[in-house]
Image (cartoon, rainbow, N blue to C red; front, side, top):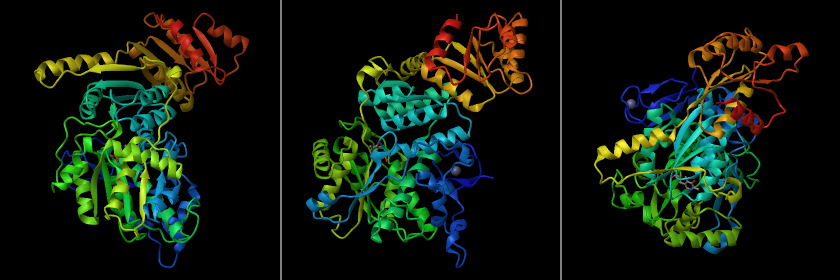
Length: 567
Ligand SMILES: *Cc1c(COP(=O)(O)O)cnc(C)c1O
Ligand SMILES: [Zn+2]
């Protein structure tokens, strides 16, 4: 049974389905939310130890302490690097400077890849793993691609990241370092998203749906859970680095501040606060202070014009690429409604103001952030100066990210595949033909490799080694019988085979392949945990290309053997 229902924002229809779905089955709309049975978490009369905050303590301190309200059914599918439970830091010096005592910094730089996108990646990649997905596509202005690359590496999922060519090269290097295919598109982010979608559709590869899908918002809502839990400690005069659980009442700040690109952060965070309110744990939702760089501020402009739907920006003019989303789409409508209901505002700051704020925050409170985060601090300064934020109000700043450059000599120069996109002015027919060919060429996998392995961890390891290397088409089977069928059907260029499997074992698979004239030319590499006896070695002698002992080979050993075995 699914622990949550999927609810369509457009028509309100609800479904129980354990797999990611691309759209509402009732009306076809794309924006979906997870809803849980919140009543279940309310303490039964007089029994406070059944309350949700009380039960969190058994799950330790990462965002997975909130797993009962996260969209992963089986805990074995959780892909984690200890993300979440980032510090809530009091901005003391900055506060003195601004004359404001209640500024708190939610330090999302301390995620595994240095930005709050780690939360999104952890939930989304765990959900992919649960759905059995082994290959995925994502479009990004940088940090999503880095976070997904890291988590997909751990989960054994091949990832194609599509990024606009304006993304800093250090960030692309980091994506490549994790073994992702980095497609650098000479276009805006909004066009890049369209191309990624076309690629995923034409190749029938799972496309991460970002803010419209379930996982992303569910990841971001954990920021709200943590803030409320930590602020409960702060307001009780306790140490917010210690998990609160049900020691002290949870608290909501007066303001939540963040710079926005697609708007996922505040949308997810407000969903989180709203769930806490539905469970009776808090009494209100915060006001939102949302900021964009003045060269790409479609939400700010639309808001101040009083529009309920956003007017886009065709050519973003900012050096802060993380925030260069020109077409906000539905996210703006949701944020607009939230601000109508709970208060708050949008404001823009110049790139120059952001860079100055970046230095101030580093110098005053020892916190070095990426420019996108500096936009939030510049926005904080602005709203305090203008009196929009009052001195007695509690403010939480999403300190969204700090990425660290990967050394040039490690990844070298030629790690992206470049895609030129012709101008819109060309006839659209020419354009889409060119695009189709370009998309076709991106995926030039000609070599087909079958992995036959019953141990899921070993299968994932081998798959990952191949994925990170690039261009292989990978098929998998998990026992000898279906493995043999796979070889017969697909006639792969190479088989990587385990020996110890239930039913037909690896020895028998080797013998069956070598006996069959249509298959006998296919090279086989055996990867085994078994110490082979002399008799067993003799059984394989002359029939296989290489024998690798599990736990003793490196990825380069396997790749060398593969290169030698392939025609
Ligand atoms: C993604 C990102 C933002 C903007 O977040 P959205 O909620 O997706 O608009 C801000 N700062 C950093 C560091 C980011 O990575
Ligand atoms: Zn619907």
